[in-house]
Length: 267
Image (cartoon, rainbow, N blue to C red):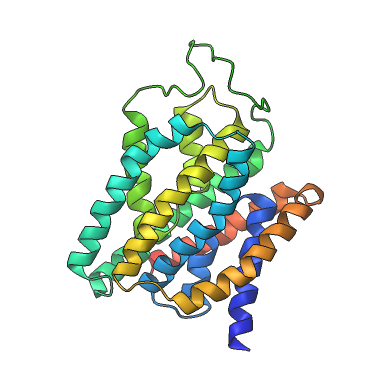
């Protein structure tokens, strides 16, 4: 019965991700901590690999459709992956189960959830008003190419910030990542921004997740149960996505994430 509950939790998160595109980390990590009593470092480490394997399939499909702008992925990963490795090294030196580290993780996770809640609400209000172009052949009013950032150093700097945030909390590669890319690459159509964000999340969460695993911060049995539920959940969610009022779901999720964020910061 206990196994079924974890599978159902994975199914629920997969369903929501398929319906709304909201990152699984912002849902799965607080769910594991609050409802299942999983220690923060184990919840974060397990969720990182959960996200990596879940988004890997999506990235393969996007790559086949040729909608991923790899230069964008590379520019952001240039900052995020090294920052992830440095953060993992610090966690290893301090010890992931250290009470001070645990407190830092829950506080940072709370802040990340609040940021994700704001980003999710913003996307819910904005709706589908973003560019609908499905190609990257145009330039913006400043004459920039779609894959050209406002400044060459910004993708690396923002990538480093996301790398640290994701490694500490497992949250940030989704909604926050999309908003960062929207700011950095204003000429890039939204479908390609989302594709780049998903593709970037794979190496980021995989490196962070394997690093946590090397620190003993991954529950492999729990991971398999969550994936067993999430994979069919994502498939069903994508099928229902066209028939569901996305703004309502995103708005409710943003409120739930804000509540979880405040509660984590109070721990």
